[in-house]
Image 1 (cartoon, helix red, strand yellow):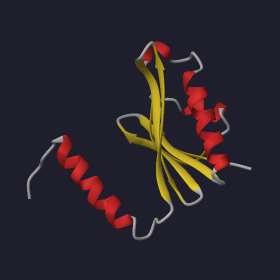
Image 2 (tube, one colour):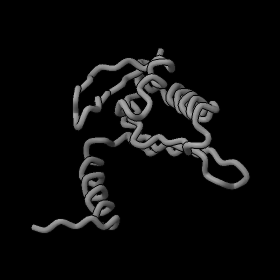
Image 3 (cartoon, helix red, strand yellow):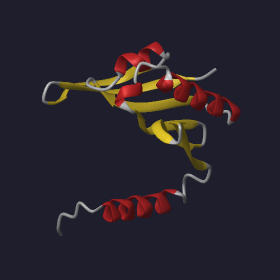
Image 4 (cartoon, helix red, strand yellow):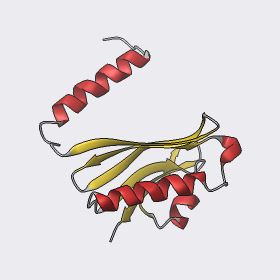
Length: 131
């Protein structure tokens, strides 16, 4: 056994797990949303839909564009896609130094809070049930 922090190794481990999971998650897809301005990346998210649930894996808005409505726009578009696909819920993880207040404003409810998870930060798991 050895430690290997190469990106290729990370992708290998993920692909092996995804391949195994596909036996069980037969109705699954990746959803990527990207916001650009003048051809430059300013925000985006990657989510996974498994059956009737979506899990946001990564969600980021470049620092200089935060609080400009980009995150809200991305999240609302994901919710539109979710409704088109008859998804019942969207879930995600975040930390207190990220944006838990943003998710609460968007109607997401914390269903797990670990306090502290490391140093003095909180870890939140949010869920939003869609109608």
